[in-house]
Image (cartoon, rainbow, N blue to C red; front, side, top):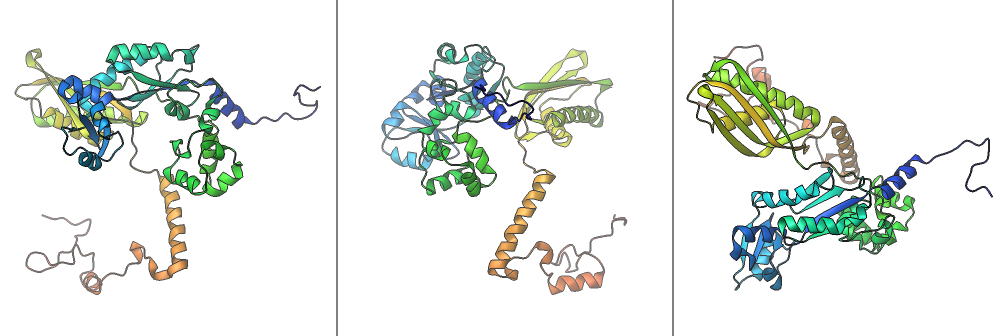
Length: 431
């Protein structure tokens, strides 16, 4: 009996991908903590009368609703317009979501989670992932953690513990080690929340109703239907998700002080300090791929008088230019009446960058996809169906003016007394 050993003089082979998957699946422990009624409970502390019949609305959908609201059919996820129609004739109140209303309560229960792990990834103020992999007997901590969180916020949490983020978010219970695939098998295909909606619709169209049915498909079938995404779907439906929990709480902060060589009063002198701070913070944030929306300033004047100001911005800031603008706007909140000795800037909350610009590699790939789509349309409907911007022929008048004036025309429409202004050459001087 060989007991699984390889014959002598035979080269050993290892499937590294499978080994890493098995290691992560069976060795990691992920918890997902969430609350039902979190936002209504938060509002009731601000205004107790709201606890009776209220719905919290965000992005035109009901985010949370009170027991009284649910009795008349208003539930989370419902369109706000539908909820308002259903509430006609009742004393329902609709409150717009404001993150600041729940920040304190959210911080309280997240601070309790910090006693169990240093790796916490908040998703919303009412829910977060926790990495419990380093704790012995992590799956036995759900009850104690639930009691501690309830003691802090007086709202009962629902905690799911599994071997991956995928399953932990779906379950409100503790899944034994190695039980992720079995738990997923019975769930409808729509429960695969990590997959793209169009892929789920495709699977449903093909007749697959449960995750277990998809798990029984050969990898080749999924790759034929979904290309490269087929491999990822094949792993997910088998309970294999290696997505790590990101350490995003407590939020990191940055702080720096600029001390002037001598007390300053002029705007251009203060501006030099702000530029230095912006360059410093911009370099740090860019290196760490982080961003911020909040700025706090502490300005020290002569006589050690200190003035503070804080400002929250809608758009995140990372580049030195954006940070300089934010510092300027925040400094406007401080009354500058005497000489300044130093300026201390603090970003109380920095977070991973939300990339809005594509990398060059992504741009090239998207261009290749666009070229393929254009070619297919031209083959189907004819070459003239689509024209690129560079292929569009300029109007006759514009071509005449360009040839006559010998340069680009700023506008084809007359300006002032009817003359057409020509763009000056780059090396020309204008008064």
